[in-house]
Image (cartoon, rainbow, N blue to C red; front, side, top):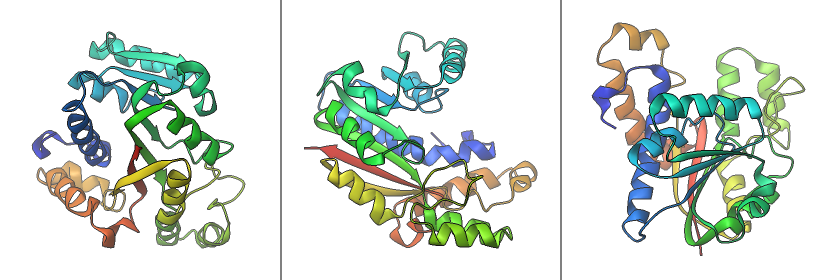
Length: 250
């Protein structure tokens, strides 16, 4: 994805993640004849559809019938129906739905924050992966969430996030938990997956004024370049809104 194609603020937020995924899948495809991709909690197809547009078959598993209906509409609009399949279910049902050692790539984005047990969810991810398969795990960063609330003047929420063992901001928080890099790395490793790379996602885009992208024709490209440069720099990972791990099943 080239910088000059990225315009909306939301597209900048997701561009680096999609770049990382497509590069990883391309490397895997060089070793395999075909790649079977499973997107857990993939909802309306924000990741599945762009991957299908490249040519990868993707099965989206989501517990929400409404999300799967929206996925079906999006697939129809993008002419990717031959490559995207939706199935209702959640992370704990993966083995029952697909069997052990059944897929090459599992995408698990923004799932561990809301499931009943993140360790069980990752164990299921590892179980359906074939040896040598790749897991893409994306989680909300607790440290960045604290800083963001301080910046917006929500100090009580910030302190709750800082002190709460799970990284929740309180009863009204839609997320059950958030993670530090050490916490999510430990969960991934305990599931039998070996981390291969770590990326900071949305290091700057949530702090950049949205209006700037509307008035400055070069702002989106500049912001995307910043995001790409910082994504793999450990100095900036701590303040990224999301933490992304690529991990291999041995």
